[in-house]
Length: 302
Image 1 (cartoon, rainbow, N blue to C red):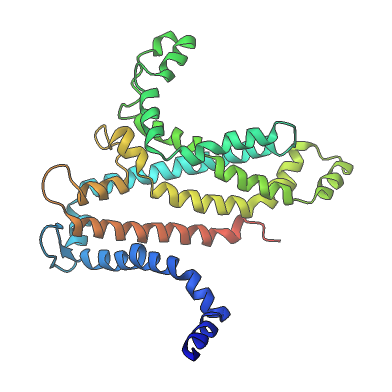
Image 2: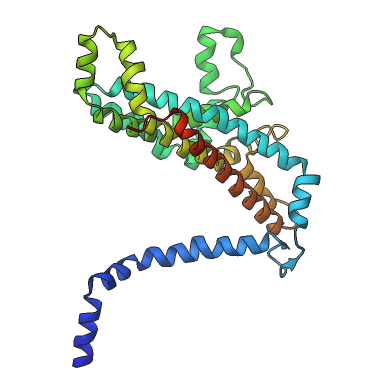
C-alpha cells in the first residue's frame, strides 16, 4: 500500500507529469528524427545499398558528388532557381492578397478560408495530378488561353524552358499560410499611425511605404525564411508532375536524392543519397544563416 501511495505521489509531481505527457513526442523524435539522422550521417561515409551491410569508404561519396556527378550540380541549380524565383513571388503575392483582405466585410471570412485552402491541399498527390492535367496541351489552361490567343491552343507547357514555371506557379498558388501571417501582423499595426499620417497629408501609397511595409519587415523576414526552406525541400511537385523531365530541367534536389536511394532499376545507393542529403542540410543552413545575417540591414526591429 505504501508503495502504491509513493508511486502516486511521484507520478503526481508537476515535472514528472510534464515528462509523461511529453513522452510520445520524445519517442517519436528519437525514432523518426534523431536516430535516422545519426544513421544517415554514418551511411554517408559508406557504400550501402540497403540489401547488403554498409561498407565504410570514408569521404569517397562526397568526393564523387563534387567531382564526378554532373546531375548533382544540375539538380542544385534547378532547386536554387526554383527557390530564388518562387519564394519572393509567393511572399509578394501573399502580401498583396493580405492587404486586400485586411478590410473587414461580410465575406472577408469566406475569402480568407478560400485563399488559405490551397496551402492545405496544394502539396497533395491529387492536386499534383490535377495540375499536370490542367497544363497538358489539351488541358484547361490552353483551352482558356485559346479564347484570347487562338494560336496557343497546343502550347507545350512541359517543354524544357517552361516546365519549371508550371511548378513555380503551383508554389505561388499555395500562398495561403503566408497570407494569414501577414493578415495577423496587419491587425497589430497601431491605427493611430495612419491617422497621424493622414493629418500630415500622406496618401495611401505613401502610408504603405512609410508605415505598413517597415512594420511588416519582421513578418516578411519570417515568411521568407520559412518559404525558402520549403522551396529547397520541395519534392511532390517535381516527382508527380514532371518526374524531373524534360532533360532534368525540373530535377529538384530532393527528387535526385530519392532517385539515388530508391531507383526504378538497379541497386539502391543509399549511402550516396545520405551524403547528398547532408550536403543539402549544410546548404539550407548556410542560406538561412545568410538571411539572418542580412536581417539587421533591412528588418525594422522597433
